Length: 38
Image 1 (tube, rainbow, N blue to C red):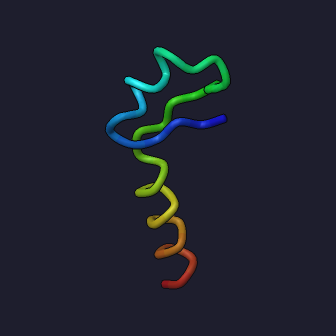
Image 2: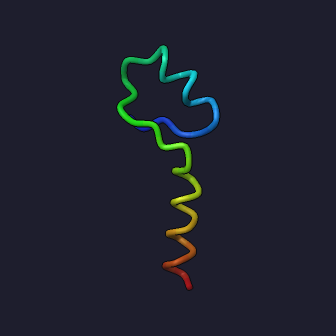
C-alpha cells in the first residue's frame, strides 16, 4: 500500500498496512501522462 498526499505522514504512524510513502505520486503520474501525449 502506498500513502500519498499531505496527511500521509499522520496516517503512516497509525497504520500497519502502509508500505511506502510517496508524497508526489499524483504529480509524477500527471507528468508521465503529459510526456506520453506530447
